[in-house]
Image 1 (cartoon, rainbow, N blue to C red):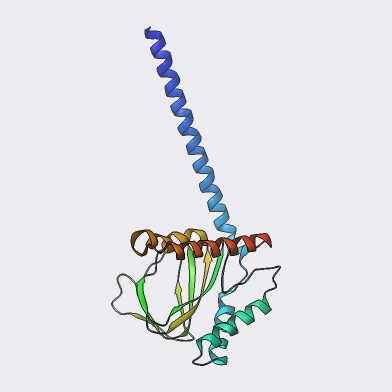
Image 2 (image 1 turned 30 degrees about the vertical axis):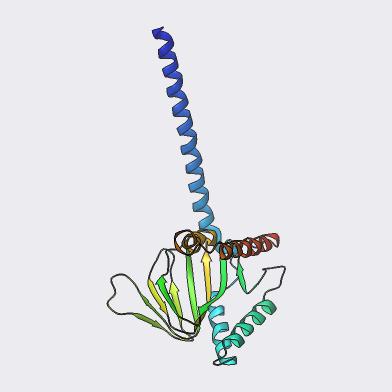
Length: 215
């Protein structure tokens, strides 16, 4: 009887060890794969931050005091510069490693930038944005033609004044940025219609880009 109990205990111990050894191995493989993908992700980038800044400046010059005109200038330029078999561009275009969007509000807004696994370039088109990093004693101020750069892993408080719009470009791991935009739905707004639309557009654009080989 005692021998039977010892045998069962030994088998349970071996099973426990094997289970956690397997899980640890899988975790290590995932970490290694993630680190490797992070090192080579640059090869999948299509857009160049400097070129996008030049485009934003050109949009401001071509349509002064006309936000809609600036947006049209940007979209027209991008769709003519980048062929559809290379990258799928929409008004809100995103794939796994890049995100390009016109972001802004006529009312003004402020809050936390979030801490993201991507570098973010915020090219101010019209209006003004303020920002503040922990430990600073003075605010940062960004106006048209300027770029508010937020490196990966950094976070700030920001404020966009009335009528502020910008061409936002993020490069990194875009899907990992999504929880920041979604969690507010469950904690305060309960706007599940907008959540559905956001997920629908995001999945559609990522799928379209994957289909043409753009990761």
